Amino acid sequence: MLELRNVSFTVGGEKGHDIINDVSLTINDGEFLIITGPNGGGKSTLARLIMGIEQPTGGQILLNGQDITNLSVTERAKFGVGYAFQQPPRFKGLTVRRLLSLAHGSELPEDECCAYLTNVGLCSRDYLNREIDTSLSGGEVKRIEIASLMARELKLAIFDEPEAGIDLWSFAMLVETFKTMSRRKHNSVVIISHQERIMQLADRIAVIANGKLKTLGPKDEVFPQLMSELGENCGFRGGNA
Amino acid sequence: MFDAVQKKLLESIADMSGIPSIGAYNFRVNGEGFARSSTETVTIEPKKDKQGIDIIVKPFSKADNVHIPVIVTESGVDDVVYNDFFIGEGAQVRIVAGCGIHNDGGCDSKHNGIHRFHIGKNAKVTYIEKHYGDGEGTGARILNPVTEVFMDEGAECEMETVQIKGVDSTARTSTATLGKNAKMVITERLMTHGKQYARSDMVINLNGEDASAQIISRSVAKDDSEQIFYPRAVGNCKCRAHVQCDTIIMDSAKVRSIPEIAANHEDAQIVHEAAIGKINNDQLTKLCTLGLSPEEAEEVIIEGFLD
Image (cartoon, rainbow over the protein chains, first blue to last red):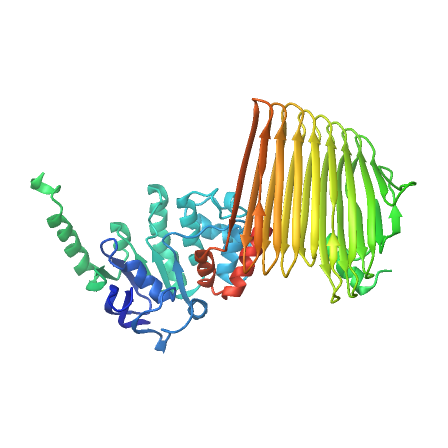
């Protein structure tokens, strides 16, 4: 179980700007939580605070009751927190197989590597020995990033907009992968997403806007509410055209 | 036959711990020939007028591994050798060279290998040269290799040079002349640390129609070390060449990268790329999110980059 207690993140000193403002949230064991909300609202920052890439300027983060607020990224990773970047970095010279093995924590046999890659829609034999450099497209790097999280057994897996840059065909496969594999391998899953089909996988949905937790509730309550809000705000819809 | 220090050097430069049971070889230890063997297809003989050997590969023959390692374990050795490789028409050969210096003394230990390759028509050569240094002495470990390659029509040459650790000073000079349809790929991998100095000058002359060359240089400069790269590709006819230099810079190191391309013919297509930069923070963070410490992450990035 992950608990955020009044977490804040401010940049720019005293007259600073709040990126995350007093967010309290619990992610239960076995839960599938979708975080959504407008661009620039603080979703990725919240994920980076949980992973330890950014340090909160206020509040506490607890994992299974233990305060991890001051732990480093490495320590949190060893503790079972994983994060798939929205824009994963590329590495000259590092092969896909090596990255998956590093993620797994030991040398991964070829067939297991292949299974993870197939699950994100990549034909594995073509990719295993390729370097994660600029020769790969954005969508390919993104899918390898997701596969690298699938290769781990985590207490909490966070995926930051996994759908970004992924074609429609691979996207359908990705949704299946989240539905089956991620639930099996990871205790709790957080996905930052704007995609309706991914939101449908959720147990609960959290809406983050202007750095605050605007809404939190079961999918069946929050999802229809979000859809109707979109309808109201969009002048191109319905009879307004 | 070899002591522990010599075995370690051999392992570092040639992945071997003693004399091989098959293939032609020449082992040079502390400035003298130590062991030599020829095969039916590869003849190795000492030069009569100066230090060094001639390596002659029979036309249309195939030889997988020719080993010619050099080991220096005595302080103060100043060794210069002239090795000539004559690769017959249509022959295929893989040559593993390399020099390891262990210096526990106060005097400089130096090895300069002057290598000249004459690669016959349609012959294929793979040449691997690793440099390595260790030892606790204050004497420097110095290597100044000179390589000249002459390639006939349709010849292919893949040359890989590696210097990862322990060589205090190195100045590498390489030249190649490519005939019609000849193809050359040079991969240079280098890591310097401490106060080491490494310089690499290279000139590739593409003289024959449809000749092609690829130069790939990847290096890591740490601590107070200094590196200079000066690869030059000169197209004198219809040809193609690509020069690529990538360096990771760390600490207080200094790096100069000066790829030069010259075209003396309108159908010469020559491209160069050069980049110097420190390890990207996102890369380190990414690997830390997999449970690696920042130091381990740095090692993985460097290892991958140089591999």
